[in-house]
Length: 438
Image 1 (tube, rainbow, N blue to C red):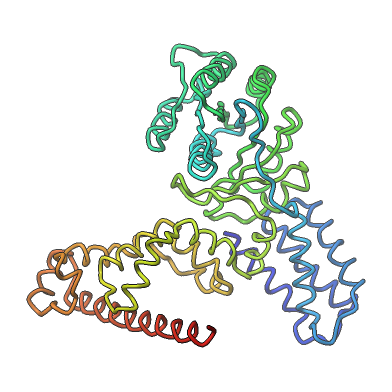
Image 2 (image 1 turned 120 degrees about the vertical axis):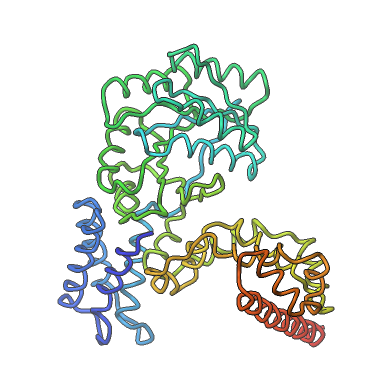
């Protein structure tokens, strides 16, 4: 995400490289390029103008410390302003109420139904809630079926009434159903159109009035750029929604919607969709997004994703096996599965500072582990447990069974051996350090 904008901003800020001090001339030259970069990213014109004026005012008012170079100072100022532009801090959804009612809004194709499923999954698995999904789109073919499939996949109940064409009545009945069966959150999916029209706005306004939701979320496809911001403004004028959801942020987005929407409608971005999987949903943190836009990575989010998959008991067990040099291919496969659960491999790698730019033109397939998994699955339990038994005939059988070659099997065995030695060494050094500390 934001590759083009990141590259342009980096080039713009390099103008100050080698400069001894900040002057009006070099700041003006830098910000001229920054503004161009923002406009090319489809950022709202007024937003880009206000942003660069604010950066200029702060840059000219700074006394550069001898230990800080002008370029470094400008990067910090731009980073802080980007953070403020996107809202300053994260804003959670309102889950007060019995049940808490969340109303989804947005155009057709923006990802409302998919997001409804993702939100239900997040609330169930991470917040301990008992959500109910409501199929309120009575127009789009297969809309109800799509929500039913998602509900079944997530083991989340779906309320629907295929005999009714009245979304207001469906929403009201769903809330009664939720109270009766103990659901503490109701997520109402609604119909969208290909463009804003009076019928749609009247309908969703009527639903809002009837169910009085605690939270109204506007879902927008971030790939639509400035059009997304204009649509958000029209919806906000009618609904006064509480927050924005940006979907498809993992696609070829220029960043205009993420950077403009807060300043235009004065409503926070609350979540971002970063993939098709039901767990591909992130809380929106303005500061972390500013880090990523400026090529600084996002280590905090990477660590959080790792912690979500962290199993303390499994880690203890693995640590003992490594110390005894008993790490085997079953353990290796277990680690691969944990990495895969964390999300898209390229997105994870881009969270490491400096890696985003290097990975820009590299296509990292989500099936990058497929060959390795095939080789391990082709091993017998004994071979996975004791790799030293692998001789030529066994390797030939494994290669044939996994659809790979003996060269690939040997390469994996060599990498596994090197990794085992490194892990053993790291474990030994940690033990020594602990002994010295004590």
